Length: 370
Ligand code: HEM
Image (cartoon, rainbow, N blue to C red; front, side, top):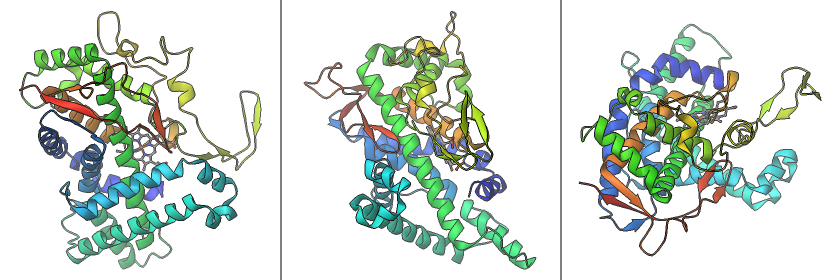
């Protein structure tokens, strides 16, 4: 999937087309939803996932969805549930003994969610096919279909560009791009509520450097403290602890261990992101991990939440742009606090374990700063 999906993304120009503007527009919708809570405590998980999902939707389908659209909500929630199920013990056992699948409730639920999501994707693709104009590419689906038409006209057979692969690619990108960014942003707001002195420093820097205007990607270089807080959020939250399974393409000896060609390998990102020999306080939220003595931003080799090498996350630059703009826009507008009657110490950082790590269900207040 990776090779042709990436070349389609390149044809479509992921970085260029999903402009900063689209994310900024989504920041406004997200802030509006938060504003409507009038400072009362609420669970921000769904709204944040809808916002992240809309960026992928704009890329895949050329449009965003209303947060109240029931088909869209069902699709995002079903994707979230699928990722949770993928990390359950029974599905991990199924991965080793696939014949067990039909006997496992989680496997049957996972298949149900997967089929529902594929069907919803087929419906959206059918609408886009009806209005396809090869001269005017609106989105990833258009780029894929146009490439497919060109191959058919040149009578090239056996290509990867067929309908099933389009559905699977869209689903993979949708799943990979929603929960990851959404969970990270949720962690960021939870850390800010738990550690208000870090939140105040971010807000002080934002007020001093940007003021009340909209933050732009270009501002990042002038916001070292905020950048460090976002990096530290990704490091400590460690939302993709197992990355994705890889397979060795040849026999290899690694740190004295022989690994046979064709062995499935999980690159444990936790072992790097929480490595005691790399980080001064590996288990504590500490933005200084990314700041030098003069307070300038400092990158670290052991910061690999997007993994590394040839299979590094292809959505990294998009995700980094999203995290920066969503996080700064929200902190400019709101102060995040625990619900009334709950102390900062009582905010629980135990993750909800699925294939990704999301914060356990919780509520926060978003108190308007204006
Ligand atoms: C905070 C956000 C994100 C994090 C932490 C993250 C992290 C990762 C990691 C660790 C992997 C596994 C790499 C490996 O195999 O070693 C991965 C793969 C992937 N990511 Fe992301 N990701 C994020 C956002 C995104 C976004 C926004 C997209 C969508 C454009 C995306 C698309 C993908 C895809 C398609 C793969 C699979 C690539 C393959 O099969 O080789 N990710 N991501």
